[in-house]
Image 1 (spheres, one colour):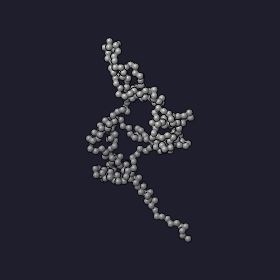
Image 2 (cartoon, one colour):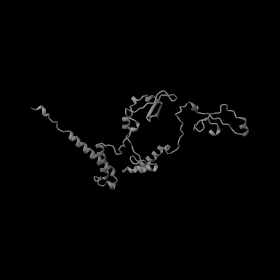
Image 3 (spheres, rainbow, N blue to C red):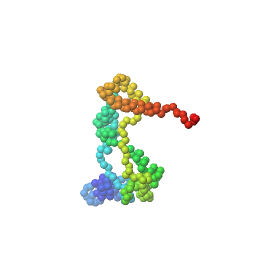
Image 4 (cartoon, helix red, strand yellow):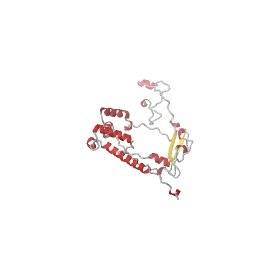
Length: 254
């Protein structure tokens, strides 16, 4: 479309719209050369970039791996999983997923940090911010001359009404935020679930499946169930220690 009109008002801005020919008539030079001046009608009016705020830039679309069709990959993986009757080892899932795309294992290829607790300890609550976050259409994060991070919330796109202020608590800065790495182990399992899984594995592989876990590929279930049983036993011991007989007050007796 841009080849039809060399004088594109947007230049290299990446706009998908071009101006239509208002007159719709062909010039004499174009008729002599036998060319056709096509009239392109815009579906949307062209926005005037001069009215845009200076701090808003029009970004171009980047073609890369992040635009892959995730739904297509998930459908392929589901079809492969349904073909298998039983999947015992979790590694089998990773092998199937790796056939359709790259697999990033939690705790190995990437880590999770506890940002929630750090933000609660350093940043004010939304009700205490200097602006109403629900009515904001723009949130600008900048630094002042002292190097402190300040935030400004604006309810309009083309006007600057508010003032930039800090949103941290007293004697707290963004530079003090240092989140801790979260553990990637399995979550706490209920005793009923542990009992159900143990009975299911016993029915399929026999009562000696824990001793033969390495040969059967059941190391994952053996380790998880053993860890959970230890944790439950410790919790029961603590409860038994707390449930002791009440002691009589010696001061009441003469």
